[in-house]
Image 1 (cartoon, rainbow, N blue to C red):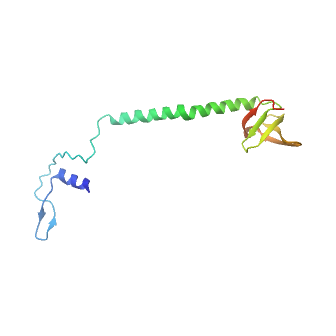
Image 2 (image 1 turned 60 degrees about the horizontal axis):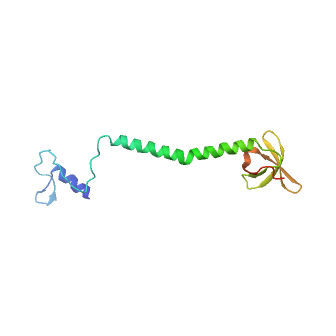
Length: 135
């Protein structure tokens, strides 16, 4: 509502016409007047788009160094640990099973999860190496 009132002030249209009492435009010349209304938002400054772009890039850089880069370092470290697995290492699988490595193949490990219970697990299913040579 305030916006419509402010817009009416800038166009210079006022008054009532006729005998029916309806509101309309009377005698406008097509010129607009500047209104210093404190309720209107300020006009944007030239170059404001560049400041927004710089802020967005800055936020992305901060996000990268606080979130993405540490996660990549963790993944690299885990990959290194998985590549250097040996018999006797205690591992945690993505399913939440703790196991001790008893055999290694190229992409599969044989793990002991209980007495006389051995399972084959994909190396990709290991979420952490808990302890080296746990036996």
